[in-house]
Image: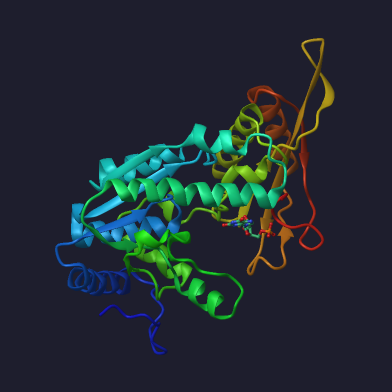
Length: 327
Ligand code: XMP
């Protein structure tokens, strides 16, 4: 039987050796629980689902079926990395679902932030359920639940759903190989399972993805401006030693335009907002003060390389009074 609760005397997994021991124990538990049956897993590319997938692949190989849904709100290069790491390098049985048009069509014209989240969450379950129904012989659902999820749901802070609430006809027994781990332990274990650093140590990324960084009604052109500017920001943070040091950093492209000038011609385009923050608990957040030459360089790159942007702003507002995300 898998352990459902973190033992009080469990040693914090901080070393390669402790990670290896945990992996061996989990592999034995997973094999005992699953036998020769199949396990289904929604693989977002986030730390928890990725480590969960890597553990299950090691334990049961192609009895694991991973489904990666591209909802069009992922960061630049993310779906490609999931395919490269899991299908090409780890040999996973991976179903890639291109649901970009489906999500963006549903979101067209929707301005209310909570309605946007609701549509993204609901559509995700529908797409995942459709894929699950096409498969035969699935008896288990792999899930990257971690120990803080359990603690928060017990404390009533966050509802932790069984795979985000699958419909009645798709209720599977859960397999949760990182359930008793804290986030830092999940990273140590993930590294030991062979996942790349930029997957294991990546910054937090919200479930609704770039959708909440394209405030108001999402349009494809403005979403692309968010994606491209975010990629430039991440590239420059990595080059300047800020990756892994700053807790979360991203760009936002709000839905208003201002005048500018390019090659002697008047432009009327969006601004791009840069936000970089640090926190330990996400309740209170401080801003990272960026070097002036880095800001200059980001302004230059974003205004010349990202179509539709003629102005760059830096948001130096802590939380409170501002939240991390814009909606
Ligand atoms: P806020 O904006 O509430 O963000 O100060 C705090 C942290 O939570 C992340 N965040 C989300 N994560 N779904 C998620 O999975 C969401 O809807 C969501 N909204 C905010 C945000 O990125 C930050 O790390």
